[in-house]
Image (cartoon, rainbow, N blue to C red; front, side):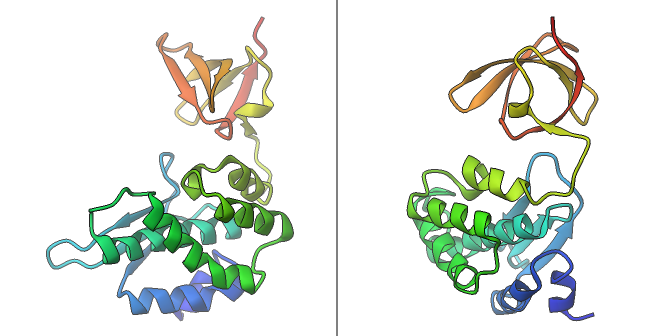
Length: 204
């Protein structure tokens, strides 16, 4: 099966030929990975006799998969230009992310809500694309329905579980994250508002 055909199973088909060309042009090892709770994608720069490596989680919806792929290729381009002399998501990375996203915006690969969120992000990229809440929310609207809820949707003091089985009680929001008490070990953790959790019971 051709690269484009494999990629088209995970991203909008119209985007697959462009990504396939990037893989060949940069001589990049591109891996479609199993779900990783801590990250959506990953970039590794050349080391010794190994070339560029990019991996993207296989359980992302097509639009999130494409955005994550472009995100990682922007890291690759930034490394080619600057090696390790700049910040991972600094001005240079943001510039490259904007450049590399341009063909997909021009071809209107994304649905309207996602396209607007991307354009808004590109005009003022104050965070990495993967941590921009407006863009993340727009992308998550296109996920397949799950039993899980987003943490921000649960009421204060709700008790919820995460994938590893630990239970938490939702607390107050501190700036961008929620302060939650782990009922398993008594420690306090900060959670992203978009974290997927399962409601266990309502706190009293």
